[in-house]
Length: 450
Ligand code: SF4
Image (cartoon, rainbow, N blue to C red; front, top):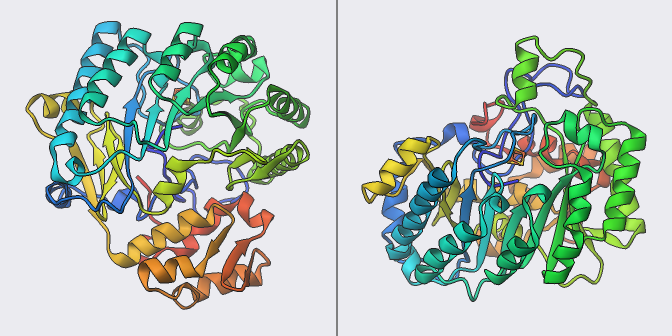
């Protein structure tokens, strides 16, 4: 899962309908204010922010979007291409490397070290060893990441080989994130995944040989065809696979997914989708099973092995307002209070870079209040927040600023406040994305997300 086109708020088209049914539209929140408010007028502000010397006290990340996949999963809504040949991939990587070179020269970046790196997609492991090494050599010659606390890399099992894993280790990757999603072959096939379970097992020993600091496995609760038996089996097989951390998403159907298009055009046949209650029951079951196996909750979606040194630097930095250079088609970034997104058109993206311009296509200049809300809602996904953090950083008393939503959630038994710590119950954590719009400013409520 990448940072590209990932955040969605309840859509007006689905609001008011049965909230428990899985319908087209989505609730996943990964940024604020909603993308539908980002605009071309603020692009100038983003470009101006790039020309200011960067704040060396704010962590700076580098995100690279590798938008290629072997096949399009039927639930996928990311910017991905499945038919590009080697020359087209080289052409894209050339643009990506050039974009990184352009960033390396801007004042907001040139005085700072890269603190975290994220290869997202798409499928970063789709590209060849030759392409990967070429890209990294060019990128690190201008933006070295030797001081980065984390280099994360997303993989699809069927694209990995022993030599590719060696190369991935060689470029400094600390966290390998394996997109398993499920262990049941019928479910993998039905949902359009490119890999099957035998490929997940085939790569295990090769991954272990490389001794990455952290192996993460991604799962999805509620894929089409899921039932209690298949889910329990997948949870057990994941425990046996023994990753350092596990990320669990609840299946959503944003507008541009294949399943969503089929449903809207009446071509979905007898597609059976678990409702939100059932997906959360499956998610809750998995959390308990992982806890029993020695993992602890790290956020609404992640479980981390106890006594595990590694963590989620990319996630925690972004949720605490880090700056991030976003490179690649449709990528999302942030610099000095300004959100920005690259063009989501292949041709526009590449031709902007060819003419020496950063391909930023829309942006949003946030106010201090919006940054406060953004950090608060994102950090609530950790399950607990401390009011002193917000007092120190924003000079804001969140007990007063968010008194109403806190009280509403408290009245519903979803939240408790003790000694300056605001904690969500497990029930609340399992549906945290549905609750977060409670904290939005009036202007942004009930709005279309993208
Ligand atoms: S692997 Fe599937 S879900 Fe992931 S980006 Fe590619 S098409 Fe989308």
